[in-house]
Image (cartoon, rainbow, N blue to C red; front, top):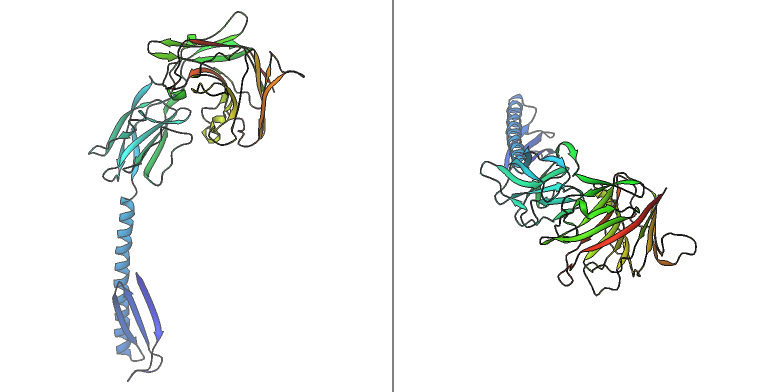
Length: 402
């Protein structure tokens, strides 16, 4: 810390009025010189002041260098040395991810996330921490994703299993590096089908949807000779195999209609979901707009269906209702800042059709992006009402009106 002052002083014996003291301070060191009209004394004063400034400047530079050195030590960095391919994730698709960290402190560890839809902690939620080796390298197995994030975290940090948006540095996250997967993005293989005049792909890789990691198989979805789409849940070994079909294109704003045969027989742990979803739209909650038929594992619930937008935990983002037996047509009309849901009895929406439920959302409604229509039939975790037997649902038709 340096202070330099020049101030007028009282007249001293043998010294003219107007002579001044110049004093330089540096962490307690000071040089005090008297400057006057006498040449010898002036040269001595100038020499003393110069020496004082030099010492002050030297001390200051040393202090600044020390600060800069401490800042460098306090700024760790992460680099990748091996990056997995850019690909849609799944339980069975893994690769090695590795790198190096500089400036890590004792006790800090690496946490990896892979982005495939949400950001998923790797390799598993119960195994999130990767040790840093003595040579400052780290390595782990990761499920595939389109992007990868490596975080240097402090002891005590608890990583969430998933994140809707990319991780960020700060707090217990001492350093962060995010990188694209290598190569052209690979979409998991699907089985193509045609339904209601649109091209769809049937999922063939596992998913953690519903709190269970279950297989999704191509033969769990098919179109019959009459053009109706069948979705099936069936037991294979000790796991339930589920169904998902996704449209190959995005439709955007407009009216979506689904005619569905009776689903009142569904078990509490099964879910039929008719929804939009954007794998890359985490900033808008994946642009998810839902019509869902389920008791969500709670057989005591009177409600067995709901309309919703995401995130579901925000009050007012879900509108549950009781779905009666019989054929129903579900619809939603999506426009800027507004989405209106209606469910009616029968195979079409027309004037006078008996309305079962309706609801309008005007807050938190997403705008279009790369969302695609998904039709899913899957199982959720339920200790009290676990899935008991194979099940099937039938969608007679899908319509879209711009």
